[in-house]
Image 1: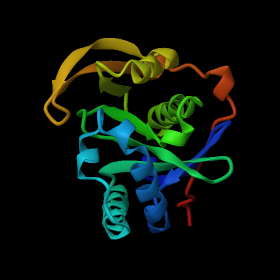
Image 2: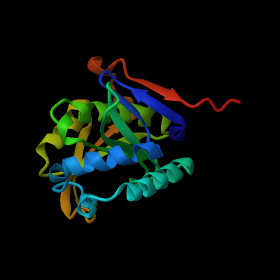
Image 3: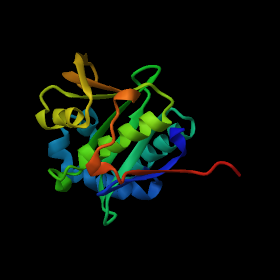
Image 4: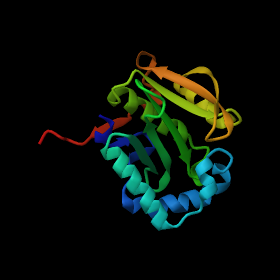
Length: 196
Protein backbone atom coordinates (compact mmCIF):
# COMPACT_ATOMS: atom_id res chain seq x y z
CA UNK A 1 0.00 0.00 0.00
CA UNK A 2 1.22 3.46 -0.88
CA UNK A 3 0.56 4.90 2.57
CA UNK A 4 3.17 2.46 3.91
CA UNK A 5 5.98 3.92 1.77
CA UNK A 6 8.47 5.43 4.20
CA UNK A 7 11.08 6.59 1.69
CA UNK A 8 12.33 6.20 -1.84
CA UNK A 9 15.97 6.58 -2.81
CA UNK A 10 17.13 7.21 -6.37
CA UNK A 11 20.64 7.88 -7.70
CA UNK A 12 20.37 11.60 -6.83
CA UNK A 13 17.29 11.98 -4.64
CA UNK A 14 15.73 11.03 -1.34
CA UNK A 15 11.91 11.14 -1.42
CA UNK A 16 9.70 10.75 1.64
CA UNK A 17 6.32 11.78 3.06
CA UNK A 18 6.22 15.32 4.42
CA UNK A 19 6.64 16.01 8.13
CA UNK A 20 5.89 19.25 9.98
CA UNK A 21 9.62 19.95 10.19
CA UNK A 22 9.57 20.54 6.41
CA UNK A 23 7.29 23.59 6.64
CA UNK A 24 9.97 26.29 6.62
CA UNK A 25 11.93 24.76 3.75
CA UNK A 26 8.75 24.18 1.76
CA UNK A 27 7.89 27.86 2.19
CA UNK A 28 11.43 28.95 1.27
CA UNK A 29 11.54 26.74 -1.83
CA UNK A 30 8.18 28.00 -3.09
CA UNK A 31 9.13 31.64 -2.45
CA UNK A 32 12.47 31.22 -4.27
CA UNK A 33 10.77 29.45 -7.19
CA UNK A 34 7.63 31.55 -7.49
CA UNK A 35 8.41 33.01 -10.92
CA UNK A 36 8.85 29.51 -12.38
CA UNK A 37 5.76 28.10 -10.61
CA UNK A 38 3.25 30.85 -11.46
CA UNK A 39 2.83 29.96 -15.16
CA UNK A 40 1.92 26.33 -14.35
CA UNK A 41 0.62 25.94 -10.79
CA UNK A 42 -2.64 27.71 -9.82
CA UNK A 43 -1.89 27.36 -6.10
CA UNK A 44 1.20 29.55 -6.61
CA UNK A 45 -1.06 32.62 -6.90
CA UNK A 46 -1.74 32.28 -3.14
CA UNK A 47 1.97 32.40 -2.37
CA UNK A 48 4.07 33.33 -0.54
CA UNK A 49 2.48 32.11 2.68
CA UNK A 50 3.89 32.02 6.19
CA UNK A 51 5.26 28.90 7.88
CA UNK A 52 2.07 28.42 9.91
CA UNK A 53 0.08 28.05 6.66
CA UNK A 54 2.60 25.52 5.41
CA UNK A 55 2.25 23.56 8.66
CA UNK A 56 -1.52 23.50 8.14
CA UNK A 57 -1.01 22.28 4.57
CA UNK A 58 1.40 19.55 5.63
CA UNK A 59 -1.01 18.46 8.36
CA UNK A 60 -3.71 18.11 5.70
CA UNK A 61 -1.35 15.94 3.63
CA UNK A 62 -0.51 13.79 6.66
CA UNK A 63 -4.23 13.34 7.37
CA UNK A 64 -5.03 12.47 3.74
CA UNK A 65 -2.18 9.96 3.69
CA UNK A 66 -3.37 8.24 6.88
CA UNK A 67 -6.84 7.87 5.29
CA UNK A 68 -5.40 6.57 2.01
CA UNK A 69 -6.86 9.54 0.10
CA UNK A 70 -3.78 11.33 -1.28
CA UNK A 71 -0.02 10.89 -1.07
CA UNK A 72 2.31 13.91 -1.21
CA UNK A 73 6.07 13.52 -0.92
CA UNK A 74 8.99 15.88 -0.30
CA UNK A 75 12.03 15.63 -2.56
CA UNK A 76 15.58 16.14 -1.22
CA UNK A 77 18.94 15.98 -2.93
CA UNK A 78 21.67 13.74 -1.54
CA UNK A 79 22.92 16.56 0.71
CA UNK A 80 19.43 16.61 2.30
CA UNK A 81 18.48 19.98 0.81
CA UNK A 82 14.78 20.38 0.03
CA UNK A 83 14.47 20.16 -3.76
CA UNK A 84 10.75 20.02 -4.55
CA UNK A 85 7.53 18.08 -4.27
CA UNK A 86 5.80 15.16 -5.94
CA UNK A 87 2.92 12.82 -5.25
CA UNK A 88 0.53 10.06 -6.14
CA UNK A 89 -3.07 11.22 -6.52
CA UNK A 90 -6.34 9.31 -6.79
CA UNK A 91 -8.14 12.10 -8.67
CA UNK A 92 -8.08 10.33 -12.07
CA UNK A 93 -10.61 7.65 -11.18
CA UNK A 94 -10.52 3.96 -10.29
CA UNK A 95 -7.62 1.75 -11.33
CA UNK A 96 -5.22 4.67 -11.83
CA UNK A 97 -3.01 7.15 -10.05
CA UNK A 98 -1.76 10.52 -11.28
CA UNK A 99 1.69 11.83 -10.53
CA UNK A 100 3.11 15.32 -10.85
CA UNK A 101 6.04 17.35 -9.59
CA UNK A 102 7.60 20.72 -9.14
CA UNK A 103 11.30 21.36 -8.56
CA UNK A 104 12.93 24.17 -6.61
CA UNK A 105 14.42 26.70 -9.02
CA UNK A 106 18.04 26.23 -7.97
CA UNK A 107 17.74 22.53 -8.90
CA UNK A 108 16.34 23.08 -12.41
CA UNK A 109 18.12 21.39 -15.33
CA UNK A 110 19.51 18.57 -13.17
CA UNK A 111 17.01 15.90 -14.20
CA UNK A 112 15.37 15.83 -10.76
CA UNK A 113 11.81 16.05 -12.14
CA UNK A 114 12.43 13.07 -14.42
CA UNK A 115 14.01 11.10 -11.58
CA UNK A 116 11.15 11.90 -9.18
CA UNK A 117 8.53 11.05 -11.82
CA UNK A 118 10.27 7.71 -12.44
CA UNK A 119 10.27 6.97 -8.69
CA UNK A 120 6.56 7.83 -8.39
CA UNK A 121 5.69 5.78 -11.47
CA UNK A 122 7.52 2.75 -10.13
CA UNK A 123 6.03 3.13 -6.64
CA UNK A 124 2.51 3.66 -7.98
CA UNK A 125 2.57 0.67 -10.29
CA UNK A 126 4.12 -1.68 -7.72
CA UNK A 127 2.28 -0.62 -4.56
CA UNK A 128 -0.76 1.29 -5.79
CA UNK A 129 -3.06 -1.64 -6.55
CA UNK A 130 -3.73 0.02 -9.91
CA UNK A 131 -3.43 -0.81 -13.59
CA UNK A 132 -2.06 2.48 -14.92
CA UNK A 133 -0.30 5.72 -14.10
CA UNK A 134 -1.34 9.10 -15.52
CA UNK A 135 0.88 12.14 -15.95
CA UNK A 136 -0.51 15.50 -17.14
CA UNK A 137 1.20 18.76 -17.97
CA UNK A 138 0.33 22.10 -19.48
CA UNK A 139 0.43 21.92 -23.27
CA UNK A 140 2.70 25.01 -23.31
CA UNK A 141 5.21 23.52 -20.86
CA UNK A 142 7.61 21.95 -23.36
CA UNK A 143 10.22 20.99 -20.77
CA UNK A 144 7.73 19.16 -18.57
CA UNK A 145 6.12 17.39 -21.53
CA UNK A 146 9.44 15.72 -22.39
CA UNK A 147 9.49 13.87 -19.07
CA UNK A 148 6.64 11.36 -19.58
CA UNK A 149 7.86 10.62 -23.10
CA UNK A 150 11.37 9.95 -21.81
CA UNK A 151 9.99 7.57 -19.17
CA UNK A 152 7.98 5.61 -21.73
CA UNK A 153 4.51 7.00 -21.12
CA UNK A 154 2.11 6.99 -24.07
CA UNK A 155 0.48 10.24 -25.16
CA UNK A 156 -3.30 9.77 -25.00
CA UNK A 157 -4.58 13.23 -25.97
CA UNK A 158 -5.41 16.69 -24.69
CA UNK A 159 -8.01 17.85 -22.21
CA UNK A 160 -8.99 21.22 -20.77
CA UNK A 161 -8.17 21.67 -17.09
CA UNK A 162 -10.65 23.97 -15.36
CA UNK A 163 -8.36 24.27 -12.33
CA UNK A 164 -5.41 25.36 -14.47
CA UNK A 165 -7.55 27.14 -17.10
CA UNK A 166 -5.32 25.56 -19.75
CA UNK A 167 -5.06 22.67 -22.15
CA UNK A 168 -3.23 19.69 -20.71
CA UNK A 169 -1.32 16.93 -22.44
CA UNK A 170 -2.27 13.55 -20.98
CA UNK A 171 0.08 10.59 -20.79
CA UNK A 172 -0.54 7.04 -19.59
CA UNK A 173 1.57 4.03 -18.63
CA UNK A 174 0.11 0.61 -17.82
CA UNK A 175 1.77 -1.93 -15.54
CA UNK A 176 2.94 -4.05 -18.45
CA UNK A 177 4.47 -1.02 -20.18
CA UNK A 178 6.70 -0.09 -17.24
CA UNK A 179 10.38 -0.76 -17.89
CA UNK A 180 13.25 -0.40 -15.45
CA UNK A 181 15.60 2.30 -16.71
CA UNK A 182 19.31 1.58 -16.37
CA UNK A 183 20.13 5.07 -15.15
CA UNK A 184 17.58 4.72 -12.32
CA UNK A 185 18.04 1.00 -11.58
CA UNK A 186 19.33 1.78 -8.08
CA UNK A 187 15.90 3.23 -7.14
CA UNK A 188 14.72 1.57 -3.91
CA UNK A 189 11.34 1.82 -2.23
CA UNK A 190 11.20 1.29 1.53
CA UNK A 191 8.04 0.36 3.38
CA UNK A 192 6.88 0.76 6.99
CA UNK A 193 6.79 -2.67 8.62
CA UNK A 194 3.23 -3.17 9.82
CA UNK A 195 3.63 -6.83 10.80
CA UNK A 196 3.92 -6.16 14.53
